[in-house]
Length: 147
Figure (cartoon, helix red, strand yellow):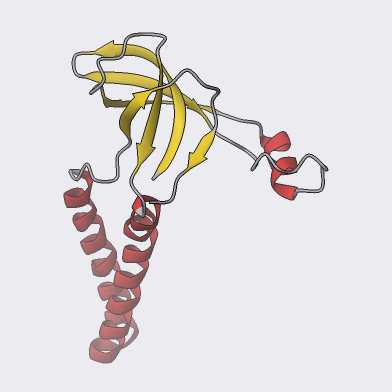
């Protein structure tokens, strides 16, 4: 599970708005030779606020640990990028076989529309969304735990 410290900004019912700071570098590049660190310095760190279920009954100002399940990033990347690309290519190949160039274009567009339609069902899934794990008193930053 990928975990990160966050601060509770406000609470609304069973939801808590938390803010976490992106980590721009791994923390072990004190020598200055790491290009990831340089990119982070150029683009800066951005604050991100989002809602999570307030299972810990945290209040404004509390520091909490939030996490996303292992594999959630890969699954989300496939759903957002891989599936539309595969559906477009499959549609184009089938269309080319059935109706030439015009069929390829038409079925490629239909493949993209089907992928968009499938996204609506996955949006309702909460399996990839961050969850509040526990209270924290430590510093902000990424903590990666292998299970």
